[in-house]
Every structure is written in C-alpha cells, then in structure tokens.
Image 1: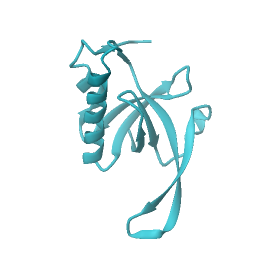
Image 2: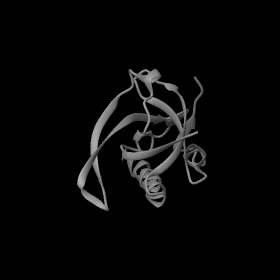
Image 3: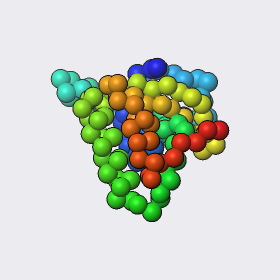
Image 4: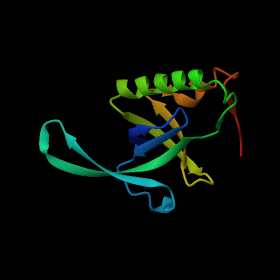
Length: 127
C-alpha cells in the first residue's frame, strides 16, 4: 500500500490521486499537473502531479439510478474529507483507458468492500 492524496473525485469509481512519487513504470497513465498552497505559507506555490485512477474490480450494475450513484459518491467524499484527503492505495495495473487500477483504503475503510454491500447497484468483476 502506498499513501496518496485525493485531489479530485469524478464519481464513485474514478479519482485523481497524487502519490507524491514518480511512477515511471506507468508512463502512459493519464496525469494532470496542478498547483497548491500550504495554509501556513500562502505566498508559496507548490506543484503536484495526479494520476487518473479507477477503483479496481468493480462495475456499476444499475446505471439508471443516478441519484443512488451520487449518494455513494458523496459518502466516499465525506470519508476522504475526514482523512484530510489522505488514502492508502494498492496499484493493481492499468486499464485500457490508461487509468491506474487501484484498491483504496481510507483509515481502514475499504471503499470496494463498502460498495459491494449493495449488490443491486454494484457488481464485482475479475479480468
């Protein structure tokens, strides 16, 4: 598991995460550069690099229920906020859309296990 900082949540399955290290073996993965400031140093700007990540081994089974999908996305965002944006990830590989496939844990809260509690909405898959 490696530590990462979540910069953006697209939805319950897709994230931009800064791992604060150079992942040269994943050079084809979608990345974004961004700038940020520390609260106690507002005059200084830092640069960061995020990797586009997708939660590994999970599909949205019921794509028609957008309200429920947004509710789960909001639940995950709340968990990330409680951890000040820090998560632990296990990088599994790269998908066909050049995203890192990751398992995400937030303070011992396993995102995939949480979502799989609702089998009417989510489905596990294995490559």
